Image 1 (tube, rainbow, N blue to C red):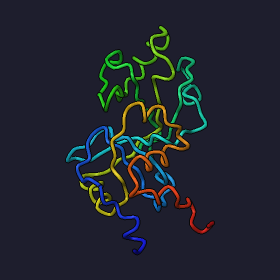
Image 2 (tube, one colour):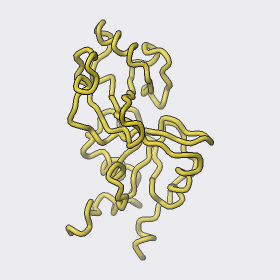
Image 3 (cartoon, rainbow, N blue to C red):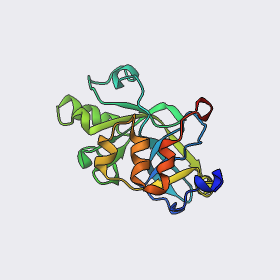
Image 4 (spheres, rainbow, N blue to C red):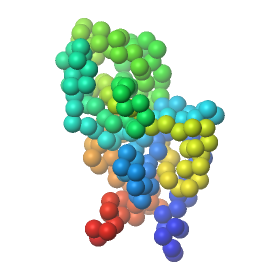
Length: 195
């Protein structure tokens, strides 16, 4: 069996939906997406976007937004698009107006002012929010092309898996949960030339 067959995604679906997870194949060389796990936030005929769930950055939200109330939630690199903007997911549902349900109890929002008010009134805790700098986006048809090229494995995971899996081990953990067919992925070195 040649390398192309060995790493071919056989159980992939081309019907991505909001709430699905994209798992980067092990040869993805773009540093933004290498060993990334992306939660799909929107997907339609116009295009798709999501946020990288396993690339935590060494900064706090208070480092990034000066007038933000003291808050210890994690901040992640959501992707290479619009890295001058902050987005967030949360688990407090309709407490934050204009939120969109993604999956389970995970919601997406841009409404930082509403979040600030909840924080100031002690109505939201740091484990209920995750911030993202930028996002990952695809133009119409682009993601489908990447799926056909076996760049992404599509999976569905629970809110608990998404929110409690250690970001450092998330890619391997999610690959392992996709079944025996992908067991070689997690054993493949990040940089094969070091092997």
